[in-house]
Amino acid sequence: MKKALIVLLLFPLLVSAKFYKAKITLTNGTSKNGFIELPEYPDDAKIKFKAEEKGKVEKFSLEEVTSFEITNDKMETINYVTLKLAEQSTFNLNKIKPGDKKVWARIVKEGKISIYSTYSAYDFGTKTGGAGTFYIKRQNEDFALFLEEFGGDGISLCMNCFPALKKTLKGYFETACPKLSELVTKEELKKKGISYLVDLYEQNCGK
Image (cartoon, rainbow, N blue to C red):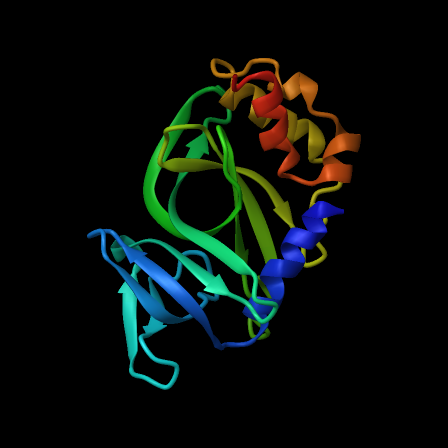
């Protein structure tokens, strides 16, 4: 399952604290090459950065960072952005309220619409975390909407969430792509993973 493969790329990086070779881009337009320790939680206020592997630690806040990329142990480049989240009205699903709160989010797939994921490290003290969330973003917007939660194996934490996911898509894309929610099938989503939504949109709605 492709969703599981996405998670396998993400979760091992967060099991233990270590610095990865990285490039960080700041909101003032400058960028720095060095090493980054990935945040344990998507809403961690700051990220740790070192210009040299054994150098002094600097901290950059969510508000100071636009994006960063890291190179993992398999020499794969993984990209992250700082992203605002939005809320969908319970009673009117096409009513979206953008928020000011930002999170650190991994890019799953970007296109005319985009999918991102966040992950919370497991806390043995509180016995919470160890799970992630997928978000979806419409074109030309700077915020993303909650789509689905997933566990450490990449599988949805909710056994009957597909109808809810379709409702989210129907409300969110009512104007931009009203047929998207009808085109997506549970079988194809399970087979191809969450990034399948980007392909489906571009094939049918984003032309």
